[in-house]
Image (cartoon, rainbow, N blue to C red; front, side, top):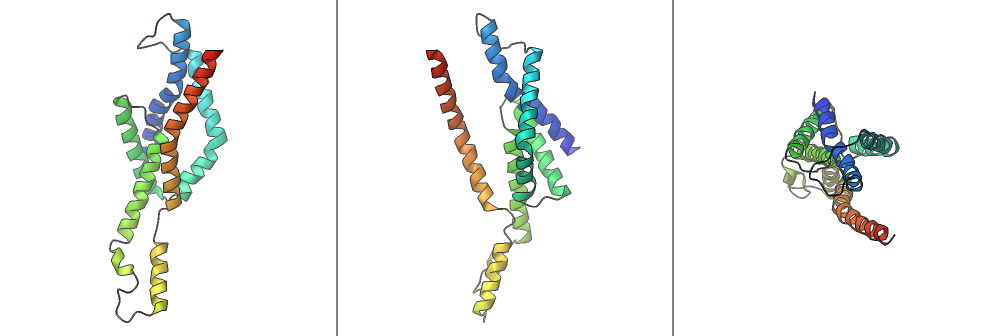
Amino acid sequence: MGVALLCFAHGANDVANAVGPLAAIVSTFSADQIEAKVDIPFWVMLIGAGGLALGLLLFGPKLINTVGEKITKLNAPRAYCVALASAITVLIATTLGLPVSSTHIAIGGIFGVGFLREALENPNKRRLMPGHRINETADEAFANLQSKLKRKLVRRRFVLSIAAAWVITVPASAALSAALFSTLRLL
């Protein structure tokens, strides 16, 4: 049920995010004034659906592999919690009219599950630090340090790269949009 709700939420939000700008462009070319609400032609919906399907076909497998396997280990209950939390978050944002990325929300849910796993499976990290046991040898301290490092259940490099991508994409798309507009305006 959680996955079905997430699919519904994804369709309710991301299709509008993809088709909305195209519908606004078509509306400005077909009307004399800018309207607050426009009718979306069927062919615009088809282009949006085709674009989403093509993007999923070309980039989906790599994204699915990274999100589903490389960030943290997901089993059925963890994946259900991610799907349900993502669906609820996306539906609330959609109801409020906020243009959010359901992919970003799902990845945030995966990080949340992974970090919670780390906290639950290692609630008292100080006991694992070397030097906290009396008469601990250097080899035991090194073994304890290695076991502590292995207990990281979320791959940190993905946290940093995804956070950087989230920060960079908005200004980058704004700059590209401005450059395209100024180029088209000169033509």
